[in-house]
Image (tube, rainbow, N blue to C red; front, side, top):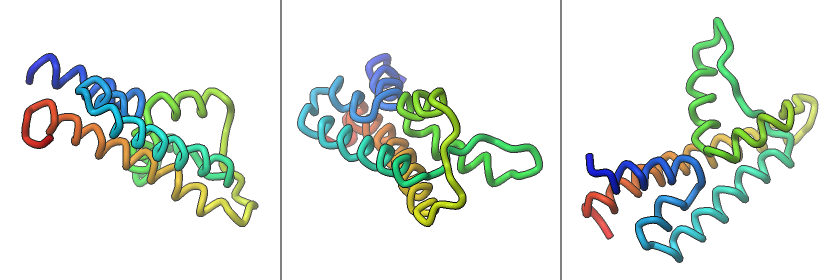
Length: 121
């Protein structure tokens, strides 16, 4: 794997859209940053849960990977305390938003890979 590809993928993981910005896709990167951050923050405001792996619950590993896919926004949110109010009627929506934001960013990492490897433009 080329250094440029690896750098783009790491940047894309850390900050949504940063890999595309590094590869010269400036307009795309701004749109991706706004969309992923909006989804993530909206999920938190809707009392969505940020998953962490729990022993004896193997599906929480997948949910944790999906949540962590948001990169630095996930780490910042985790440092700010626990999220997810099960008693809130928007809990499920918020959790879906945070998971979707993380999964979306994971797809953007793959897109950065494709662009860096000249598989697409």
